[in-house]
Length: 287
Ligand SMILES: *[C@@H]1O[C@H](CO)[C@@H](O)[C@H](O)[C@H]1NC(C)=O
Ligand SMILES: *[C@@H]1O[C@H](CO)[C@@H](O)[C@H](O)[C@H]1NC(C)=O
Image 1: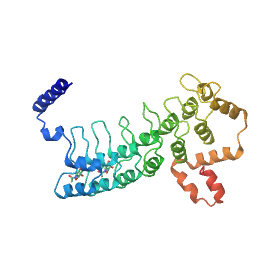
Image 2: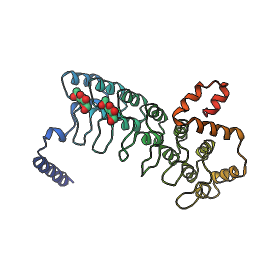
Image 3: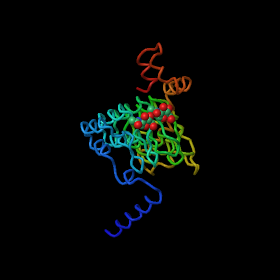
């Protein structure tokens, strides 16, 4: 084992010589990284005052701000941003501080980053903050991302939409948040709809939610199966879907869908301002 480590060192040294890398830039993290990672605000402030570069990054392009966010250290994140840290810094894997804040469910870090101009969504093949927050059930982060302009219907080829992720991960609150914000209830991953995913996972609560938002019970996936066909045999969800099929839709529910469709995704937030009785408004907003 020790010999292997030695070999690794030799390879690195050789690489450093070939690529002319300054050993400081890749060999280790900076004192700023350590302070940010451990949430040591005083040390961090002192280092900044001493003139350390807040944008210093490791060979993988991890910055102190990445460390502060993955550690949920809001005050450190703020100090770094105030000192001019790059909020859009991206590691070689495309991970941003915002993605890290979403991984750990730090709503405060998520908001500070967004308020300071971090871009709310990733490029298609990069790690996506909204998918990450959704998969971990961090609905506060999902809400912040959407209110700062992240696209609720962003579709990543290997993941599908965030709503699809919520269904796969059985994250009811995240699914609810996305749907209330106008996520397309039919848009999943390729031909697999969110309802297919929730049915397959036997998650009746999410299935019920999707149907409430008008999910198509007859949608076909690539194998030409309907959601009820992919639900585990004799499961609660299969029974629920069979019963749903046999029951006429409520007129109030159909009207709500119709109104929401007419209003359109980008104006759903205006529902609250319509001159309607509060109960009707709440109903239209699925509250
Ligand atoms: C850090 O990087 C950002 C973005 O590249 C830049 O705007 C900012 O001036 C840099 N801050 C410092 C202190 O170098
Ligand atoms: C971060 O990136 C976004 C999108 O590229 C850009 O609009 C924004 O100005 C950047 N923020 C900062 C503080 O540079």
